[in-house]
Length: 198
Image 1: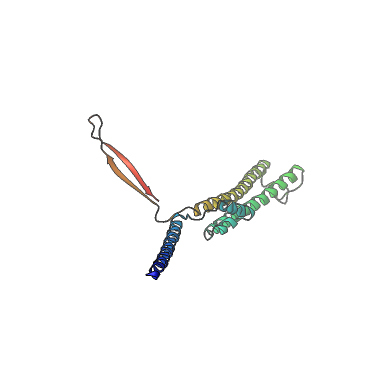
Image 2: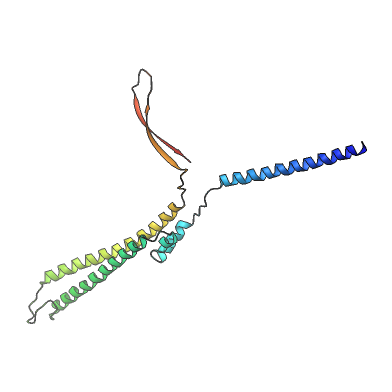
């Protein structure tokens, strides 16, 4: 009987220790389980500004940063190359007509006159051609700048949208349900209900 008290005390402390360890392990399991449920997808607020900065430095670099370049880069470079080509072509033609107009005003032969010095294009025709070619040149330059700005905006917006949660747990279910009110004073009404869940 002397040892019974000691055995009881040892069993008591062992059972308390085992119970405390089991309780701690369930706490850590529930904590880790709660952490994984609460954890939100990573959101980096600097991604859009980085994408816009890269696109401003080098056209198309923001699309490469967003990994959305397989169909966007050909559009960007194709559009910019086409508008730059038309800018250079219209500028060269504008300079030709302007040089011919200046030579004609100075009394010199120009490229739009035949061997006898008879003008093939009138002075008004040269002025009109200059005006039209200048407008086309400026429109080509404006198109190039517009494509450059739009690719910066597109890279920034895409970087914003990539970070949104688009899993299957997000749903939007529209349903048309009648909203019937049985009061004597009102008539039947039809409403639209949108249900969404996260």
